Amino acid sequence: MKPVAVLIGPPAAGKSRLGKSVAKLLGVPFTDTDSLIVNEHGPIVEIFGTHGEARFREWERQAVTVALETEGIVALGGGAVENLDTQSDLADQTVVLVTVSAEAVEERIANDKRPLLDGLESWISLVERRMPIYQRLADVEIDTSHGTMDSHVDRLYSRLEALS
Image (cartoon, rainbow, N blue to C red):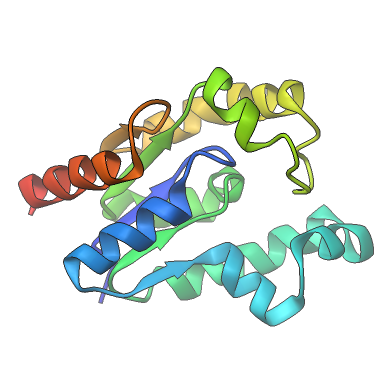
C-alpha cells in the first residue's frame, strides 16, 4: 500500500483542508501527520513547550512513517520535509506541493498559535528555507493564494487523475 498522493508545503497553505476534500472526492482515507502526533502526544504547542522541537521532530518522523504506509491522501506537517529520511521516503510517492503567497497567508496566520510561526516574517523565513526542498520533491504544484477551496480541490483532482 502507498498513498495516492502526499501533500507538502508551508504552514497555513491549506494542505489539510485540501487533502480532506480531495480524499473525500476520491473515496479514499485522509491522514494528517500533525493529527497523528496530536492524538498520540497532545497539542503541538504543548509538545514544543514541554519537550522541545527535537522531540517533536522525532515524533513527526514516526508519524510520517506510519502515514506513508496508508493508502489515500496524506498531508505532512510543513517541516517534515527537512528530515532526510522523509525526503528519501518521498522519492517514490506522488508529491503535491501546496503553496500560498505571503499576502494570502497573512490573514490565515494572524491568530495562529503554531510553534515556529510568530508572524509573517517568521513564515517567510521558514518558506525561504524550505522551498528548495519542497520544489525538489514535488511532482505537482497547487497554489491556494486565490480562488475557492472547491476550485483548488477540482484542480488537484484533475492533476491526480492525469497522473494515474
